[in-house]
Length: 481
Image 1 (cartoon, rainbow, N blue to C red):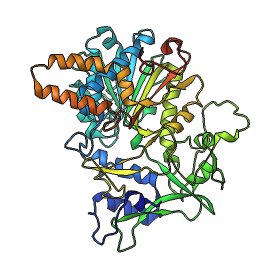
Image 2 (image 1 turned 90 degrees about the vertical axis):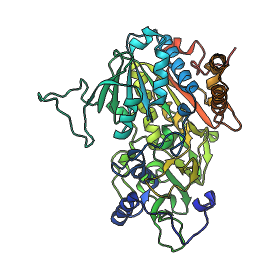
Image 3 (image 1 turned 30 degrees about the vertical axis):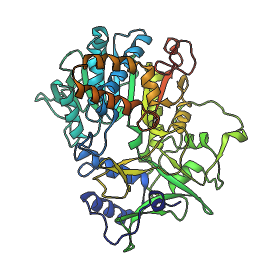
Image 4 (image 1 turned 180 degrees about the horizontal axis):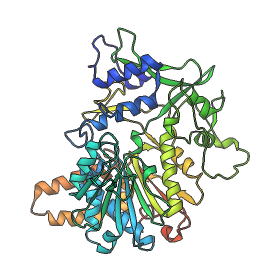
C-alpha cells in the first residue's frame, strides 16, 4: 500500500496552501535532491524561524492536539505520585533530578510539583530539568510554574548572556535558562536544549519523564526492492494532479541510511536486534541520502549474543525506524546506569515494529504529513519493541513490561484520587462532570487513551529495592492486589 492509499487522499488540481517553511524545504531539495523523512520532520518541527514547535502554542483544545496533562489534573498527579514513590524506593536521596523531555506547556510538571507540595522532604530534595528547544515553549513553561529569579543563559540566537562582569550567570554552562519554583525556591528549574547537555556522573539520581516525546522524533522508512533496502524520501511534487506541493518517492538505490542499518542485506528476513544496534547513532549523522555518514557503530557495552536463532528473525517488506528515539532511550539508560534513578515513557505506539505510521495532525484530526509544513504537527507511532532492544544493550538496565496507560494510572491509584475529587465536587455538577469526562478519556480502553497509549519503565537492576524483589517490574507496573 502506498502512502496516498494508506491515508485515502484523492488527487486534486487545487493544492493545499504554500507556507513559509515549504519554500525552505523546496530550496533544500533543489540544492541537494530528495531528503529523508527524518530530515523533513526535523526541519518541519524545529526550523528556528518557521518550525511548528517554534512558531506558536499548539497544545490544548484551541491548538492542534490535546495531551493527557491538559485533559485532567489526575494524570499529572499520578505521575507525581510515581516520582515520589521512586524517590522513596531509591532511599530518599537528599538530592534528585526530575527530568522532563518535551514538557509542552509545563502542565504536567506543574501538577507533579503540586503533589510535591504535600511532601516537604521530597520537594526540598528535587531539582527540575526541562529538555526543550523552543524558546517560545520555554517561556510558557516558566510562566506555568510561576518561576522566580529567572535568568537567561543563552539568548534565542544561542549566544551566551553576560551579567556585566564577564562571567556567565549560570552555574551550569550548558543551561539555556534557569529559575526557581515560586512555591519553594529550593527547587531549581533548569532548561537544556539537549538531554546530553544535562550534567551526569555527579552521584545524583534522576527520574526521567517522556510523555508524548518520542512520537515527535524523526523516523526513516525503508522498502525492500530488487536493489536491496531503499529509502522513502520527500521530493517536490511535479504532477499537476498532486494535492500537495511535496510527494513521497523511493530512492533508486540503497541510501547511506539504509546501508548503515541493513549492511547490504537484500532479504526480507531481518534480525531486528542487529538493526537496532546498527541504528544507534545521532540522526544528525545521516545528513541525507547523498550526505556523509560519520558514525555507524554503537558506543555502548554489549554482550556477545552468539548465533541468532531462527525465531529471532522477522520478515518485513517495509519498515519504519527511529534511530533518534533509540539513541535517546539509550542515553537515558546510560545515565540511569551511571547515577541511578528510573524513567517513564508514555506515548502513542506499538509493541511491534511497523512499516509506516507518520502523519500530520491539525485541528485534532489526522492529515497528510506533507500538508502545509510548519503549520501542522508531525507524529509517528513509537516502536516500544525497538526502544527495549536498544535499552537492553546497556548493562545493568532493564525495561518493564509495556502496559496500557489506563492500567498504569489505575495501578498508581487514580480511582482513589478520583473518588476524593468527586466528594469535594458533590455540590458542583459541572465540575463533577468535567472530572468524570477527563477520567474516562484517560483510562478508557475503547474510546479513550487507556489502551492506545502505552507506558514503559526503565530502571537499574542494581537498585534491588526499586523492583520490590519482582523482576522486570517497578512501581506502577505491579498488578494491584
